[in-house]
Image (cartoon, rainbow, N blue to C red; front, side, top):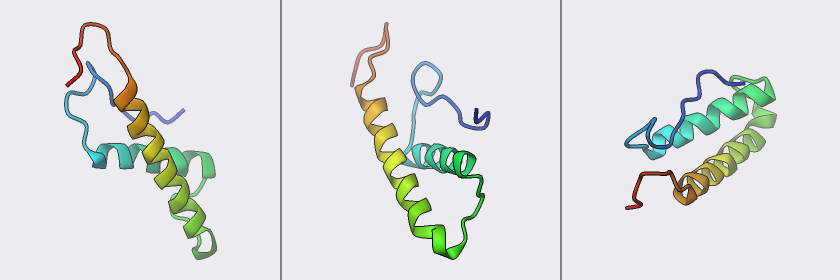
Length: 72
């Protein structure tokens, strides 16, 4: 779907920052909405979607268990 969204879990990414998670959420919302930059009347909905996807992504990454990796 979004080729520019990189995998954010080990072993593909060693250190994932909040910025990485935010960028992935933004790319996802841009892709599914079809807007690179939303119009003013859609900006709040766009930002809310990015925030929610960022939170869900962070929660997912924190709960994944990868074989052969110990949790910190």
